[in-house]
Amino acid sequence: MDKLRVTGNGPLRGAVRISGAKNAALPILCSSLLVKAPVTFVNVPQLNDTRTTVRLLNQMGVTAARTETHRVEIDASTLTKPVAEYDLVKTMRASVLVLGPLVARWGEARVSLPGGCAIGQRPVDQHLKGLEAMGAEVTLDGGYINAAAPGGRLKGAHIVMDMVTVTGTENVMMAATLADGVTVIENAAREPEVVDLANCLIAMGADIKGAGTDTITITGVDNLHSATYRVMPDRIEAGTFACAVAAVGGEVTLLDAPVTAMDAIFDKLRDAGCSIAVNGSNVTVSRKGPLKAVSVKTAPYPAFPTDMQAQLMAMNVVAEGTAVMTENIFENRMMHVSELCRLGAKIDITGNTAVVQGVSELKGANVMATDLRASASLVIAGLCATGTTMIDRIYHLDRGYEHIEDKLIGLGATIERVSS
Ligand code: UD1
Image (tube, rainbow, N blue to C red; front, side, top):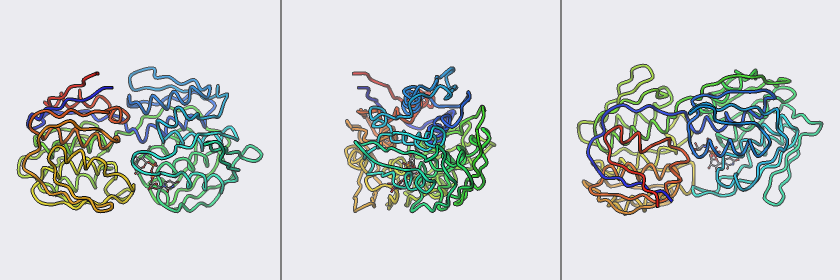
C-alpha cells in the first residue's frame, strides 16, 4: 500500500494547473448511458474514481475507454446488462449515479446499494423517491436496488427533495431527460457540478432550465445524441492548493480554476490574511503576513463546502487565534481531527463542532488517511510540520486528486510516494 512522505519545507511558489472536477466527471461519465451513440468527454481527471466509473460501464457491456490522458470515449449503444455490481459500487458511492440513466434509457436497472461509508450513513432515499415519483417501481432485495419503468418509459413529475442532495438531484435530472413530459425538481442542489452536468446533457439534446437555482425544469425528449463535452475544473482541488498556500505561506497561481464557483472559499482565505488576485481563469493566492484563524459552518452551495472543511481545518491548526468549525452536511466528517492532533494540533470536538486553537508549531508523525478530504488535510498539515510526516492509506487521496505529489513538488514541496 502506498504512503506519502511529507517534509515541511517552507513556502510554496509557482503555478499549478487545476484538473477536471471529480464530482462533475462522475455524473457526466454516467450520463453516457442515456445516449445510444458515441460521446466524448475531455478534461476528465485521471483518478481512481473515474477509472472505477469506466470499469462499471464496461461491466454493463458499454464500450468505454480513456483514449488520451484526459479524454474518455464512450458508446453505450452496446449496453447489454443494466446492472451495477457490489464489487465496484462498494468502492465508490457515486456508482449510484448509473441508476437514473439506466431506468430512463433501458426501462430497468439493478444497482447495488452503496451502503454506509467512512463519513456517514449517506442514504439514497431521495434518489429513489424521485424515480418513484416518475413512475418507477422500486424494490430492494439482497442489497440491490431494482427499479423498473412500467411500459419502459418514466413519466414527468413534480418532485420536492426533502433535503439538498447533489447526486440525488443529478440522478433524477438525468432520468427526467428521457421521461414522457415535464419534471420539476424543487429544493434542487445548486452546486456548480450540477450545472456542469446539465450543460453536458443540454449539449446532448436535453431540455433543461434552471440548473444552478433550486428549481430545475426538465422537459423529456425522445432521444439524446452524440456530443463532445469538456468537464469543468475542480473547485475542491483548487481550494485545497489555496489552503496549502494559506497554511505554509508563499505565492501560487492556480491555472484554469473555476473562479466564479469559489467565492465562499476565497472569502474565508481573505479573512485568514491571504490575498487573492483573479486574472481570467487564473488566480494567484498569496500569504505574506500572519495567518488568522477563521470560523466556518459548512452548508450546500453557495455556502462553504463540506468537501473543504478538513483542508481549512489544517490551515486553522497553525493560525493565530481560535476557530469554531461546524460540519452541517455529514454526521461523521471529523475523523481527521485525531490524526491532526497526532501532529500537535489542539482541537476539541463536541458533536459536529470542532474548536481549533492555533499552535505555533506542528511536528511530523505517522498518520492515517481516513477519507478523501481528510487525506488532503494531512498533506497540508505535513507541509506545515517540522520533520517528516508519513501518511498511510493514501488510496483515499488517489480517489480524488490527480498527481497531487507531482503538483506539490512543482511548487517546491518535499513530498514523495513510498510503495511498501
Ligand atoms: C456529493 C459529493 C460529495 C459532497 C456532497 C455534499 C459527488 C460525487 N459527491 O455527495 O463530494 O461531499 O455531495 O456536497 O458529487 N441524503 C439523504 N438522502 C439521500 C441523499 C442524501 O439523507 O437520498 C443526505 C446525506 O446523508 C447528507 C446530505 O443529504 O447528509 C447531502 O448529501 P448529498 O448531497 O447527497 O451527497 P452526495 O451527493 O453523496
